[in-house]
Length: 178
Image 1 (cartoon, rainbow, N blue to C red):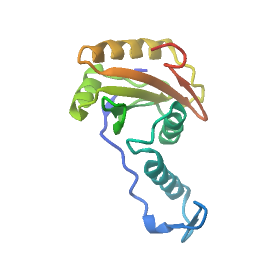
Image 2: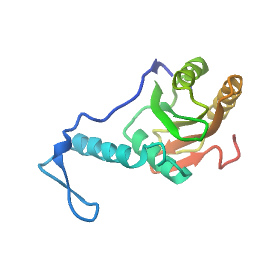
Image 3: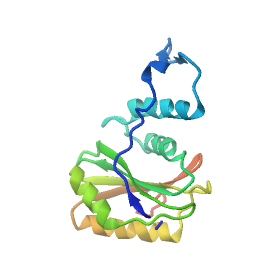
C-alpha cells in the first residue's frame, strides 16, 4: 500500500430514509423505484444501523462483513481505520487515504493524528484490493509493521489489518502477520 488524500468520516445519509418501509419479519419494502446508487446507499445505511454501534462489531466475521460492504464500491485502493477504545468498542470509522487501482500512499503521521484525535486505544486497519485478490503484498506487510511500531510509541494497539478483495478477505491477525 502506498496514498494521496486524507478524508474524514463518511456518511451515507444522502438517500431519503422514507423510501424504506419496514414490513414484517425484518423485511423491507421500497416506497418507490430506486437507482442502483440509491439502493447501495440504503444498504449502507441499514448496515451502519445494524453493525456500527459500539457493541456490534464484536467478532472478526461481523467486522469483515462491514468492511466488505464499505469498500466494495471502490475501483481504487482505499485505506481506512476503525478506531476503538480500551474495551475495543468502536469510536469511529474513517476512510483516510485514496490511491490508484493497485496502490495508495499511507502516511503513519496522519494515522497517529487521527488516533489521537479520537483518543483511540486500539485500531483496526483495512484496505481493498480492486483486483479482487485479498492476498497481502510485501508492501502491505511492511506498512503494517511500520504502523504497528509507530503506534506502539503512543500506546495504541493494532488489533488487525483486513484486506478486502471482492467477496473475500484476509486478516493479518488470523494469518499471524500481526
